[in-house]
Image (tube, rainbow, N blue to C red):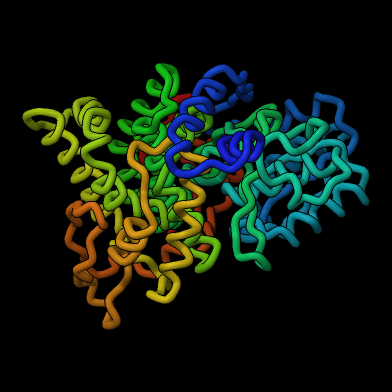
Length: 478
């Protein structure tokens, strides 16, 4: 529910820090009562083609298929285009979306939508593609500059129908009320939140994810974990969001290492897709927290992929959140079967498990491209975002935010040695190591083309962008 607190604050006049807890409690009451739609979900190998068949039957005259150039070039759109071509539905392919969905690219997509007289959007791609499609659909029905729709319910009319096929397991954008795009001129992220942005239908097809490189699989998977954990420890959690978050945490803990180790493990891929969706449902209701506030700034200014930034920041921010978050982290630890005497020990075990998962799947402990000179401005912006948007378990001061960012700052020799900086509250920091994944983790996903023979879809060989072959090791649940 991005910017809800800020909207309330502006409505009642300026408030100081002391008034923020009251506003956040009030916003929490609102978010628990706002009806949030959920898309019709199709899951399993071949579900993308089934979604296209369904869309073709809905009577749309012309559908804009929003994607990126890599997905288009690799032929992943084939089954969907074939299904749509079998009917009278015409398709316009817009494949210009790039990472972070820059505002000029989204504006170009909207212009194409209008010029071609499209009446629905079908997004096939990662979070940036789905978010771009959402904003295109909203802009198509509202005569308002896209940047002016940033915030909560800033559009008068509902968007054009939206359908989504995620090709990564991380953002959860196929079930969320928000779309995040980048304003490169202002060097900031624009968050457009509206319950009508939830897609009408989505397909979770592991065949489209089987060729993702390990680094992308790792970063997007940890993005989903961050969504689930921050939703669980925040102040707006509900019994329903808790169930989704717990399920996502457990599934990611089990299946993410498998998906990273063997991209063709369709069971792991499908479970990760479901976990990402569950985490998306959790944070759509309960929101996120300080990890996202910091990651958004790093992403906007240094173009670090959002999932990677979240993954690096999650362990240190969780340590900072103690002891306020101990009870909730302890519950997650018990759910994972971790051991410890009392909430404090279990919370520590939970955080250690997150760091161990990062290390196992190759997430670095330092932030690519972050420079010391960036930190004061990024910290100030992150605190403003957190203060006016997120029900964090522990408020982060500017000094705290600066210390957290310095804690993930690479040493000049890239040796990953600790900087010696600690958050102002005196919380402990984990030791840092060399970059395990390096900047290559920032590269966009290059998924493999799907099998060409539907009858053998579950056992087909897929090919990554690097031409390495990965054979599905297990059959996924239909």
